[in-house]
Amino acid sequence: MRTSPVTTLALALLTVATAVACSQPGQPTSPTAVEVGTADLGPGGATLKAPAPVLQSPANGTQVTVTSNVPLVTGNVSGGHANIPITLEFEVRNAANAVVANPKVPRSAGTSTTYVLPTTLVTSATYTWRVRATYNNAFGPWSSAFTFKAPDIPQPYNTGVEIFDPLTAGRTIGTVSGPVEWLPGRGVRLVGQDSHITYTFNTPLQEGTFSMMVTDVDESNPGDKSKIFSIKEGDDDLTTNDYRMSAELRGRLYCCSPGATVARIITGDSTDHGRIFDTPRIIVDYSRNQWYLWRMTWRLGSFTLESRLGDENGPIMYTSTIATGSRPYRPVPMKIHIGAPIGRAGAIDATAAGMIVKNVWVSSRQTRPRFEF
Image 1 (cartoon, rainbow, N blue to C red):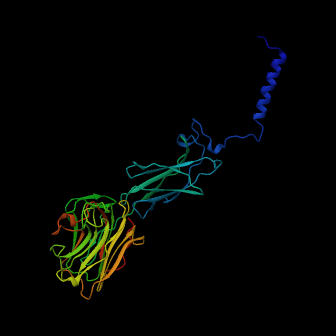
Image 2 (image 1 turned 90 degrees about the vertical axis):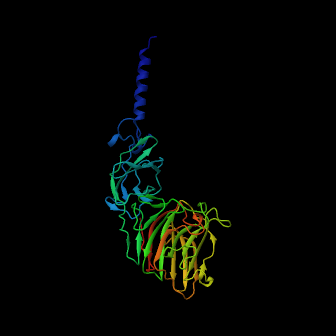
Image 3 (image 1 turned 120 degrees about the vertical axis):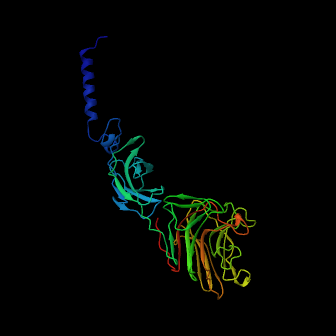
């Protein structure tokens, strides 16, 4: 088919007009800040034209105060992509350069986005983190890498009148009985109903406090009158001990109210009912996934059991203070137990098997140190 000169000229003019129109200002174009392509657009082979985020917290080289649920905060990327559903990819590496977390988090409104790192940190170890913007399968350049250090654990001690035992470094200053599982950075699991850890004071605390952090135990615990912690005089049976002190979380075998919290203290004579004192038995809805502070406090004339969600500042789960008369609490020697030894009622009334414990504190001081690890 032949083309006339007029037709050829018309096609040429149309081509030129189209090119001019496409070059005119005011025509919509994709924002270059989020341009996506298959070719390398930036450092590290980035395929998304977005700036690298600016990390905020924890600042480079700092030491955090907790070993889990560490918040990582990054500044949001900015530019011509406010309406694009950008995600922020976090990468966290341990001291061996292995990736321990790599989530993509939707960008928050405002100037920053936070990711809470669920990984339990190894104490005193150094971690590295960085962030980049992503959109579908495209990604921008990585931010600068920041490092942070996990908390250092104070050394455990038993002065004979005060105990601190973190239990998070795979060891204890107490005496272990029965099977236990060490969970570095987290605590110790008391595996069996016969499992317990014992500390000894030769001088009794007539007034004092015994507290620790507990998790992974609730009303489904395989026991009856299961013990969270206990104190007694010497090696005599706990149940009939003249100076028994114990806190219980009733297990699934308890006839009446699994999940009930209750405590007992005896001030000098287990055959004298006038010296046996019990707190109210109340069902508490504990979660196996939460940490709780359990604390027994005794003074001349009174005894208190409390449990709180999280720590000493957390919501109260159980609290009861009862009068205990005029006789002092003075077991010699004073045997302090995480859990409890098996007594005359058998294993089902001993330790709340499966619970994980850390940060044991026994002292005549009323103020518990804040253990942030």
